[in-house]
Image 1 (cartoon, rainbow, N blue to C red):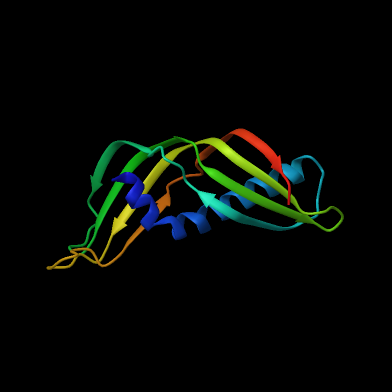
Image 2 (tube, rainbow, N blue to C red):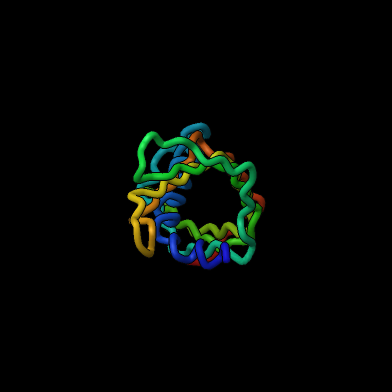
Length: 144
């Protein structure tokens, strides 16, 4: 069931993950004194077969009758296949494959507007309440 849900929101996750990965890489390049990464893309984003774990689910009072807010702690220790392409001004394109990583953080889902008939929810959004913890367990360089 969770994997089906992940497939449905994969486009949203792709953009969110892409932004987070880009930010983390830029921070590490800056910390190492290596400026110049001009393009970072995700040619491959497959979230794998292991579903995330959701703990401590809370239903929040949203203050409105047409929305529901849920907060949870999410932990993902997965087997995704994510390829990050890094292109700098002075080096050839580098492809890095992330095959195992861990992500944890506090996540909030907002379901709004609530509808009186199926599908009962007009839209949903999700956001991390703070910067999630991301740990790459396995990185390998691949050929372009």
